[in-house]
Length: 540
View 1: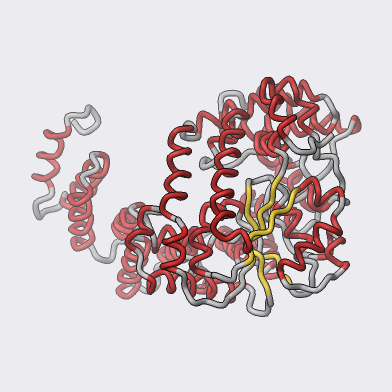
View 2: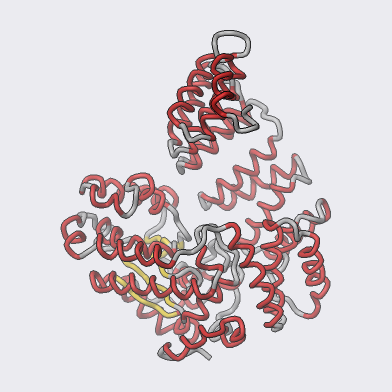
């Protein structure tokens, strides 16, 4: 009856079976499932709680209740359920493993590591998965040596464990060990020739030339073989687009990138121009001069935020700044968005009910998280591009914060977004017209922030940075109150991992090839090329 959608009848029978007796556990679990599918969350919670009271030592029942809490945003409550179980049954290795995943979600990294260690101590099955996860965790903590150690330990135990091989290869890309990364991707393909993500990754660490026709051919065959699997085909099309772009076969690249983005549209929520405009307008209305003045905190901290459109040169700029002896490149830190979602939700509406004390706590927590990750750093850059959405809040939390706004010519910027597989939150990136619309809204918001606290914002153009880096960087360092250091002109000076899609581009010698790239894709851009003359100095 449940399977046939006869839910009232199914519920009646489940409830009868849930009376004390031999079938109670099975019935309660099925009843909870029915309630969850109907979004009857209070009843689902009560049923799952009754299930756990029926057998408080049952890991499966505990996991069901913990998952219920976690999926509802109550991660700490989920943790509490596992801790309750472990008080009664302290030797359940899998419970520690699940606990570690939850601690990581709350960015309680030391607790997550300790839980993983407990699962290993209790001889969990498939321990290579634990070591691989610990490698990922150390990567998040930017402890690169420990990450390598964990990946290598996983592969010592299970040399053909593909998740560890793939994670390790990604790590090697981040730390600029190009050939070893590609060797691992090749190794994965000998184990599983249809591991399409590894095949796609082989394109990115190098410039594809006519010598790589075999790889291009494999990608074309793979696209056909994987055509019924959108999740597999999308990255293959992006890789194929990159290969054809390297080969300067721009028409073929356009076809591949268009196919990739059409698949991307299937997994993302459709971009809504009106909703986007309303969202930006709401930020402008809520974060006005009066609110900023009334709620400004007393912090004297001077964090450095680098923000702007994604793919606007922020990674390149951060790598150059990170070569300065007084600056540590922090990368795309997600502490601030995470704190906002936990402390000020729903954002931005929730800001109207926030108190100064609450805002002060958010600022202190942010600084604490950064200092824990970079305990010896003097100045740390937070290069999360979409923090431009939060600049009103940043100004209130840290009145002395330094904000760097990276800018890039709209057509080059939008093409770079269109040519990259991004997450589900980037629905605008799957359509060039939507990219341009979002770019315009971003400029509108930045104009508002500049009108409120422009003295704290330093704008830097990608085209200027790559064409004449020294004048641009001299002005930036003066804005930051730092002495000039010629090391910032050396791209490899920072020596820090790069964890963004730009990781291979920023390791090349400084060049202007990406400026004016739009001219190779006039057919793809269509009428959008009319925007080009609006740029003060159109890149050529």
